Image (tube, rainbow, N blue to C red):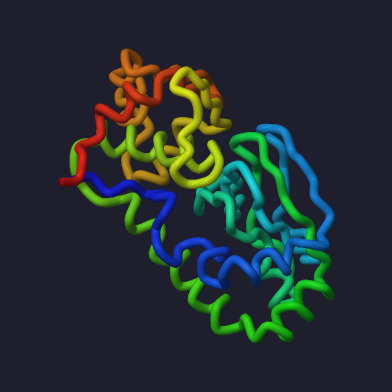
Length: 231
């Protein structure tokens, strides 16, 4: 069995699940909603934390620029998660960039309003659980095994996160475009760029098309056949 790194219904993974639907709805209810096209920068490393973004739809990647100038992929974020809360909570600057890998919809929560809501709802223990879950997340993506089903599982999970609510995979003929590079996938899976390039080539007959900074998925049912099913 291959671990899928982004299960839509992983219990307790997203902050929305941890805090519960009524609390999440109250948090985002009065917020300003913004839409960002694929490839947009949502948060910039080094900026002061003046607001938090609640991700309502779409998928984003978290990238940190290291001292040597190279970019390190830290995580992917999907609907029901928050972005930029650490800099708001500790009063520091953003530790990473956040870019949309699909079209994204976010609710913008100003720093003061977010901190007041967290205090009023006694959410600090929940945020600690959320932070710990994030620390464990990257380990799941790096489990050993055949790269082809692992790569297919990662791409499928990202596509399904971007599709909408759990259980609604979208029309069979839908095409999903991800602003994602081979280097980022290699970092995420803990393998070499050449291994990912070869894997993407092998997945071509299953509807995977890769360009320099884009990956297009044109046949999700075919791609699902690459991933062993749990019995």
